[in-house]
Every structure is written in structure tokens, then in C-alpha cells.
Length: 301
Image (cartoon, rainbow, N blue to C red; front, side):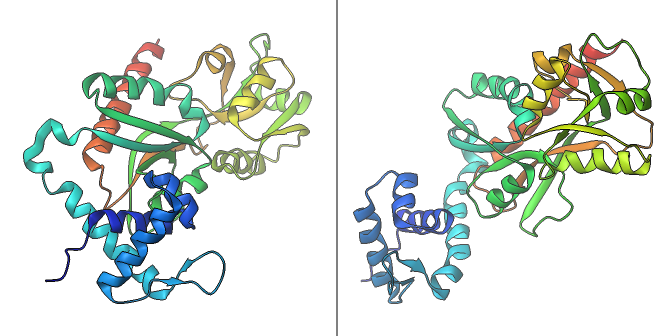
């Protein structure tokens, strides 16, 4: 009788696909590099096919190996979710690997996660910061269970977008700035750019270009967090989204609305269609919507 195909072997194969090497996969699945090699040799023996190109020092998945990975994901997903309909709360355990753009990590994410772990204390959550485009790619290849990101222009067919908030674009200034004239402030104050790699920078640039605004460019920041720190010290102004769940630094800054024709930043939770943590991500989405709604009520005049 042929030995049954092990879910453990398939999980290791998926880890190799996601990380790119036996060594990195070993760290991900918490076994030694030698054990990864032994598991893959066992998988090849069971399937009676070669899954790796071993002509170089570091084994790489060959065409057959790459073709097997999506099938392996399907099998692991079916295995992990086969009791979801009858397990109830027991499906709300394990680890959730969540990506998030930096502006969400200091406000929305901790408040939402706090409610989730209070209800389901057996859930372990790992948060990975990054830009929207990078996090989208990680969700698509299965390195992340989900990600809180700005809406992307194009998504893969295996991804699902769950919108939960829109943030209007505003001119951000230090608290001591008294003028409310957006054009005057942009003409007179240094302008702090956000890196062009950030999706929100494109929204700001579109508004500036549409209104033929000439800037006195002063600095470029890699994240909105560092940009806010510069604005707080009155080193310049910037066009940014009005955060749906602001952190204390952002909350103290002055936000001057732009014209109504400005496109907002749209936020959502990105998941895979075949994700194995759908019950957890659905509950997290509910908590985020509740957090945003609560914050909006507190901010309303």
C-alpha cells in the first residue's frame, strides 16, 4: 500500500515556494534545513517525480514543482477548513499573518486587534508593515493571510477586496498655522512629498497637477508617519488622507479640506479566495468596520 500524502509535506512545499529557499522555508515551518530537504525527498518519492532543479547549490522548484504548488494550496485549504462549519469557535484559533500599511498600524490595527483577541484569546496575530503594492503581492503568493491596504488598480483573479473606509484628502499643517487658504499655504510653505511608491502619493500628485499648483519641494518621506512628524515641527505642509482612525500625532495636526472633486483614499482588507483563515479575516473585517464607525461618531460635531 502506498503511504498517504502528508499535509505536512505539502505545507513545507508551499513554504519553499513562498520563501524561495530550503533555509528560509525551515524558519517558516519551524524545522531544520536538513529536515526540509528530507521532507521534499520523501514527497518526490511518494509522487515519483522530481520537483526541484538541483543542478546548482540551492535547489529551486522546477516546472513540475511550480505547477504542483497551487494544487497543494487547494489540498491544505480543504484540510484546514473542513471542520469550519461544525467547529464554531474552535476555528478562531491559530496564527493570522496580517500585512498593513504603516498609517493603519498606529491606530486602526491595534484597536481592531484588541477586540479580536479579547473575544478569541487563542488567536496569535503577526503584523507585517509595508506599502500597498508590496503587501498585495505577498497576499497573492500566500505569504500573508490578509492585508490592510489602499485599493489597487489591478488585482489578481485569486484575490478578494473588502472595502471598509474612505479617507478624504486634506492639506496637513502644524497646529500653529492659522491660514485656511490651501493655495496660499502651498505657494508659501515648503512641501513635504511622500515617496512616489506609496499609492496615496499618486492621489496628491493628481490634485496638484489638476490645479496647476507650483510647489517649493523641501523633503521626501518614506512613510506618512515620518511625514507627520516633520509637519508637526512646522517644517512644511503636505496633502495626505485624513486618517479614519488617527494616532495621537496625526490627531493634533491641522487638516484643511481640499475641493470636493478630490478622489479619496479607499481602504480595504485584501484576502485570497482560497485563504485558510477566512473565518478570522471576516471577524477582523467586522472589528475594523466597527472601529472606523466608532471613531467617526466621536469626530462628528
